[in-house]
Amino acid sequence: MPANKEKSSRSLGSDLARVDAHRIAATEYAELPELTDAMLARATVNKGGRPRATDPRKLVSIRLPASVLARWRASGDGWQTRMAAVLAKRAP
Image (cartoon, rainbow, N blue to C red; front, side, top):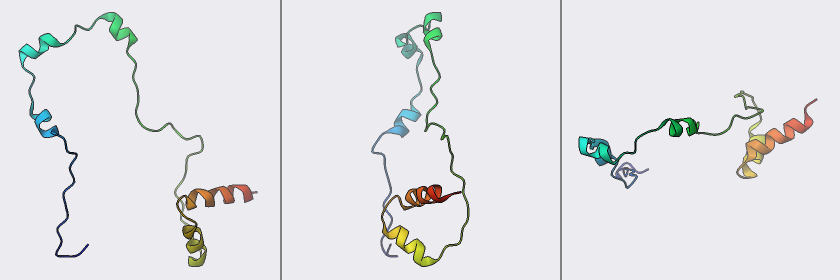
């Protein structure tokens, strides 16, 4: 980025600051439904994120010739996954 050009700020385009600043008044509690034992019995905990991989990846360091890396990178996005597949096929 050129030194004379300022970095633009990123924005979600939302008013989260206003939402965070809001304090619930006592009158707003009347709008909330009463929790019953039946409601709590139906409740489930949903953990977000990706499911755990059956064969998780490990970070390794390997020294390869620059020409080999250049050819793999030139093959486009997903080169690391394709390289791993080739290595897995050739593994003893």
